[in-house]
Length: 453
Image (cartoon, rainbow, N blue to C red; front, side, top):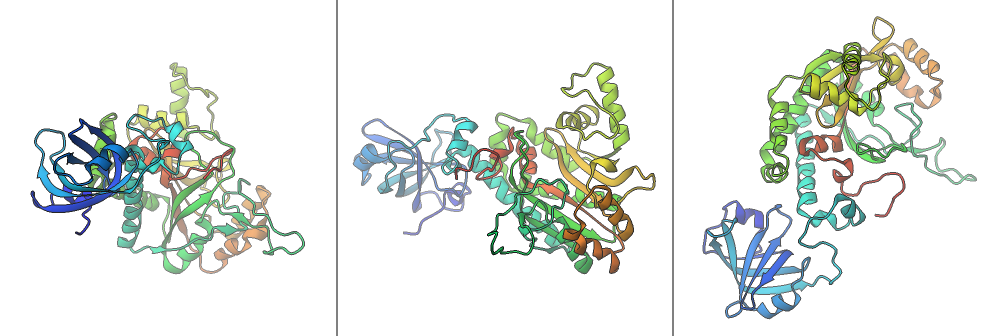
């Protein structure tokens, strides 16, 4: 008999009283000696289906009682029925249960609440929990939405290299790849990419609208709840536009992918909303509200006023030229504006070398999109298009120009203007589901001190 996915049963794609077979992994069991109930999940949905086994009519009943532990994989065959008594509106009355693979007694996941800290220690198994499964479903749908948005808007996907000799951010936080000293594999010191932006800029000068979407790596010794050593970045680049036009694209993009998740992950959002009902309001606020634009200098003044009024920031040393912390970013978008905001025109001294310097000579045409609950999720800028100015900026920062000369040379060959942004993929997941730690937003988190899986 054909195996049916639980998702399709719960969606009403099969008639009541149909004879069906499902397979999956046992979430829990309970029995009274003559009747047993199995909560079964097959990964097609975060919802389980109840399997009812009866001693006098279910073949394999004795195996269920003796062997069917949590985590065991089974095939259940029976009739698909209405269930008007329990929370579920349907169940399977089993005619036969087959144990495919029994789970050992030391299976660490049981029918109880496990802490995220514990689950990180068993990252190879944590996807079997409802919470992590819901997060990973949202992650998958969000990735699809990202590709769909760009595809529908005429962008070309570019596979940026993972091995590179460029430190795109100029911060020196890249993982260096070791080489045989006697016979080096590469002619320059290789490292794992911190960004695909420079490569995207090159292709934007050929296709006008491009994007990269892939893993990036930062050797930051940071232990905050917002940082990973390996994470995914979405980095579009568009030729012939400025910062103001870029903000329109960012807003449309964020609204689109958020709405896609809201429309296609209802079960997952409902699951998280049981404990955090405000996330639905937060999602709707992104979709329905216009993002505000705020100059960095004005944001600094608002923070200074908050400090003078007695707001208890951990870091009260706020001044023009400060690289704002999460608490400052969140205050602006949560307490002052109560919405996502573009904080724009940052001091050039705290931003990357490639950003276009404004006419004042002090700030750059850059913005961060700040959202309640997380802070920054998008960073973007108009790129410096003047060859001489870019060379001078690199020299000011004492950068090794030789490794990025190819990038600078783009300005010599018809580079009129370009602008782009980067979205931290995992931070977007954090924001939508109000996750407290970014390590829950990726299947196998990488951070300083641990490389278990």
